[in-house]
Image (cartoon, rainbow over all chains, first blue to last red; front, side):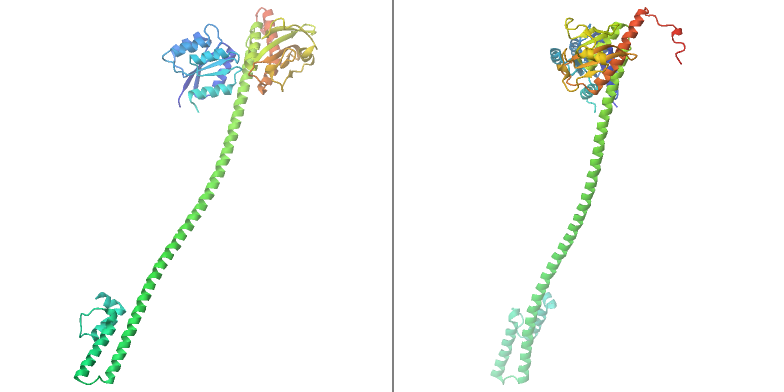
Length: 125
Length: 318
């Protein structure tokens, strides 16, 4: 059975906890947490991840910058990225998708939707 | 030669050959009787020419022989016709036999088809039953997954509310629960004045300070909920269209069964079109835990962030 790794980049501890709970339902998925974009890049430099879930609005480095940096990284340039946005941030969402994000989830997040999106991008049954 | 040996007509022909041995090699089996007669006549002529007519006994014998040969020829023809008919009947019989055998094979095939149809029906029935069971299980799994997600939300919310001992931290977490889990866009947390006559806005989001002011207990939707202690949630209306005058949800806050304030959600994010079961559970959780977390954090600050000594917990086991 293949093992997958997921990096969650989210500044809100509550949202991180919710995402970890949700993704615990996906078999063989190992989840790593990062507080913001900089922390996320640090973790991406030290390990390879199969999927990245990131919030857009974060201090220090936001999700848009993170997506841009990931897409220019030879190791993770093809890694699927899911962005978490609010419904109002339509422009941010479009920008993230243009920069190379693969999917988006709007807040308030629903665990089944997070699970389904991750499974779809990882092509897990 | 072979034909002479096996065919009755051949036998008669042979007999005719014996009789007309004076002209061996002459062909034409069907004319043999006439040939024989001609030969006899020829003899007769010779006899006539040379001597007297044949004696009557010889003539009689000749006639008998001629009749016999003629009868044999007829019988031969009849026999040949019967042989032909026999062959036809045998061929017909073989055909019928083949047809019967074919019919039998068809019957067997039809029986087999029946059996297979029965098997198919049974398998289809079992398949449909399994499919129904599978659908039921899938639906149940989805329900359980949704239930799990709800429980996870409640756990996380509760964990967050009680995860800080700073009033500001608690307030930030309450706002986070409202925004991230409930999907509230414009909301306000009011706390009651010491005499419980007024509700004072402590924290709000999505509105200006001028819009939010103190509310007298019993006044408007917010004041009514505080006074009655019963939450009011607009279940049938789109909560994203709520307003300050007609909030989407108002939830009383209690500590140890004393009402201490209210959370008013005036409107939700535009994608939040209705409140779900989990939202009602979150409202209950906030109503029972938000104020308690705030009060605990405030008392902890008042105690200069000192944890109570053991003496504070003695005799609690009673």
